[in-house]
Length: 169
Ligand code: FES
Image (cartoon, rainbow, N blue to C red; front, side, top):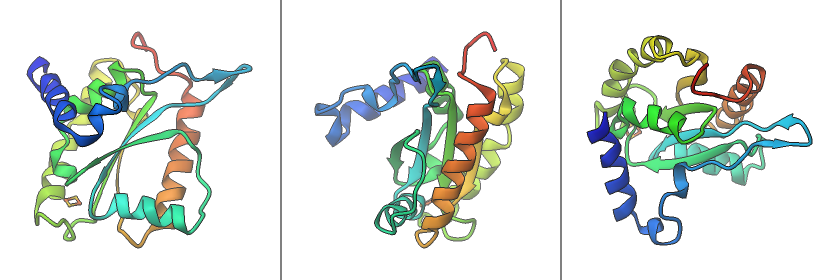
């Protein structure tokens, strides 16, 4: 796991935006205001579908909570389960992984690898004491701006019900 965490750091170090915000992409600040809980959700979007869906939600002015911090990757297949654990370690209350629908991946089978790999994430979270509801995998196409907004809203409500994530959970 330590090795994979280093991969994240190498990735951020070579990213164009890293000069402006070195590690803040997955570092969260406190999330309560006047007693109300505002969850922090780490969201991975693939470049070709779900990120375009986020764009469409924006230009269509679909309302959704400002709870998500998006990291764009070229394909959902880039995401290692260790990245999800690292998100929790850095203070995310929930992690949302999104990609193209099965059959639509621009790298053909990237999302199939994601699907097969992520089957193990919820049981793993359960074993290490993290409520599996804090993780979700969804497929969102570039034309599904409404779906993007609905998923973010629904997942945010789920995390709000669960409350802030604490490692001893
Ligand atoms: S390019 Fe979107 S999941 Fe592979």
